[in-house]
Image (cartoon, each protein chain N blue to C red):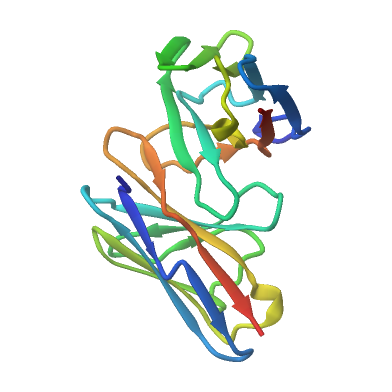
Length: 111
Length: 114
């Protein structure tokens, strides 16, 4: 079983819609949870960084962690064409421990 | 702005030559950096963990003599692809941990071996 599971299926939404992305993880010791956005031919860009359960909001982006069900989510409100990218979820024990990544979701926001 | 810088962003080389890629943390010191490889439409594959002042730790299946890693200072790690072959063509990305726990990535280096 992979440490972080993310359904890689592409997701197409109309501009202005809410994008909902989800991942599950298997290691209950994971403490830190991150979402990265990766544009084509670029390195991943840290989008959201959360510790422990709860919600974190940053502009149009909301990250949600439910440690009881080992479930992490990212919501993008009022989606824009510029949000079209691949979104990767990741979890780690913390410190200098390596990240476990999901496969990534390709999101296309249609104008 | 970028907090982790990678250079070069593009490199084309002939088969059999060696290529060095640099990864720098710009505004923080990183005792640990990570090197990844990414194939088109695939997720990141961790190759090795670079430790400042000591030997790198390689993931299973990654040839340490092929992919030489040097972490000579707290802000610089280098990956050298030795005797490169076309199958080494890929997108190589480094990352570094800030002491707050956040992990930042470089912009990536696209290697094409002819």
